[in-house]
Length: 143
Ligand code: UDP
Image 1 (spheres, protein in one colour):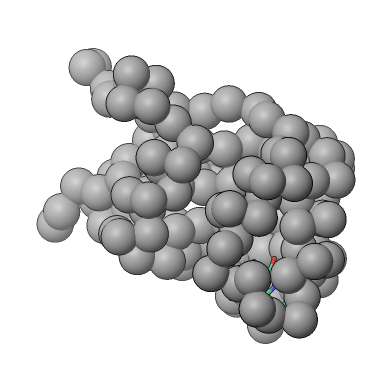
Image 2 (cartoon, rainbow, N blue to C red):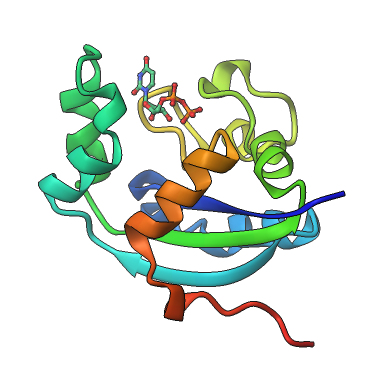
């Protein structure tokens, strides 16, 4: 099994509902290690840049407005097959379709406000980690 790194966001809705710790607990219970973490309030430019691939989609404006509506937590998770393992505990984009016991099923209200983000591939993970973290901010475990 490959040890991978993936990128995660706890979105403004879940931060507002005080669910940071509960969601961190899901990561750790799944064997994913948090190796970098910080709270930020995205600017319009940061949110547009992060979701640039969706810029032509009809929901883009609403997505940027939502992602700038309050602070978020961004983290880097490390573990075996971390990209897929994280997507599995995250659940489907639409919480109404997310499997029972997943983060989005348990903490999200709607497809537009769906509690958390997870990179969908190793290539996306590398790009997204670098978008928010410098190499010095990553803290691989030494024990
Ligand atoms: N999104 C939305 N409406 C839609 C589809 C997506 O608001 O109809 C938002 C939602 O927050 C989602 C994000 O756009 O998490 C990125 O969409 P993607 O299809 O990449 O889903 P994800 O990888 O987050 O599951």
